Length: 486
Image 1 (cartoon, rainbow, N blue to C red):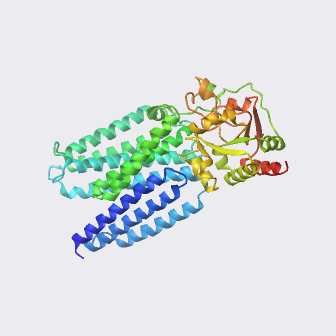
Image 2: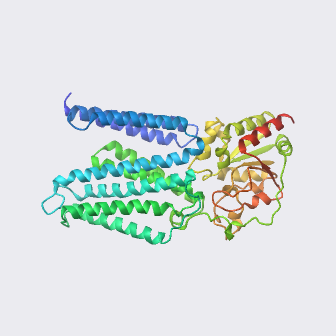
Image 3: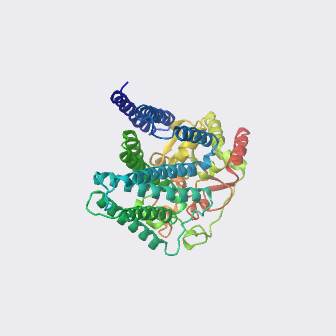
């Protein structure tokens, strides 16, 4: 087969891969079909990678080091398989952040490599010869966006791991440093693009220095952008960085002339951007406010003392079991505490037990519950919770007034009534689950510790609320035994 025919077959394979990407993304709209969507997308990527390798092997036998390529595929595939099989659900958000970092970093390195390759095409004056400005534009955008994604995602992951505190970290002069880093990166990028278009001539060393300055500025900006953002905003930040990763990958596709990279990056970038906007809307805040403001306050601050002076009503496991066993309608509100305790199977068992008694059971899912987009959906899907029982915030909120018992498991910020009434609260204006409107409320928590936003929750001193202090997994096991005894 000649190179032209093989190239046509590869382009056809890319079309199939791109179609599978789009179909897979569509299936990810629903938890019921998300797994199949992932499988389709993975098949599409395998087709694309194998097709590209076959084309390179046949058309350019001397290109590349196949030992490194195959070794990288095997090592990376084995590492990815191990991570996927062993990662705890509580560690999934930081794993997603690491994936974002690797994607953005890899795209940036590819662009840097291409820039170095173009060094041989410079005129004696240093201008990039025989190139249109668009290629340099794609390289520069790839380097800058990929670098911001790399360091920003690493900081986000470190915060989620608990190695950095979840509250906003304000560095002395941090905003000034962030502004300088951004200005330097953008300014150097503009000069590079204009040089690539032939409008300016610079010597070789200056062009290299400009790229390095743009790179360093972007790396610093990634750090200073994420450090001041509090933990409660992490789902939005992860989604935004995911959009950045997609953009960097799409730019990398333009740099190397690979259609499948362009399509895959564009899909990831667009879907990440849409999800970021939807999640910001769910918090009733703008993306700019999230990036600039920092969400959450330090321990002990005045804004955190919203529930001081209230009376906590503690309930026993038997009291909670009686309320659940004789209810007509129960809404379960899962949060990060459920993920930490790996209690998703216990909550499914309790729900099945209640349903067997003829009780209507559903789950209230807040868009930013947990530490990443869709965290609760993924967690409950692992326990095979029926998808029709998962109700989004807008659908479940009208039902709370008709709910006999709302069972809250580790969800703090997304059930905090202060978001409606307390203008001094950092979460004021964020739409919440209307748990306080249920007839009775049971909250399973290990302690009275604050949520990731660092604010107290007045729900816990509501006269209708009974606090059952226990680890979520053990607490649910105790509840299951007590309900069976009723």
